[in-house]
Length: 106
Image (cartoon, rainbow, N blue to C red; front, side, top):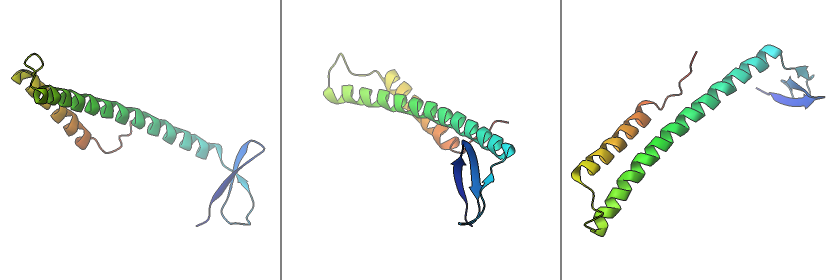
C-alpha cells in the first residue's frame, strides 16, 4: 500500500498513490495522533524513571563491590549494606522485566 504525507501551505495532506490527489488529513485523525503521542511521551517518561532506578541500584552494588575488592577496612561494606544493595537491584530488575509492556492509561 502506498501512503505519503506532505505539508501544503501549513496543512498536512496525504495521498495513497504516487500520482494521486493530495487530500487534507482530517482533524479527527490529527487528534488521534496527538493523543497517541501523549501516551508515548508518558510511557517514555515512565520507562526513563525505571531505567534510572535500575541504574542507581546497579551503581550502588558496583560501588560496594569495588570497596570489597580494594580491601580497605574502612571502606568494606557491611553484610547489611550488601543485602540492601542486592535487594534493591533485584527489585529494580524484577520491575523492569514485569513491566516491559507499554501501559496505556485511559
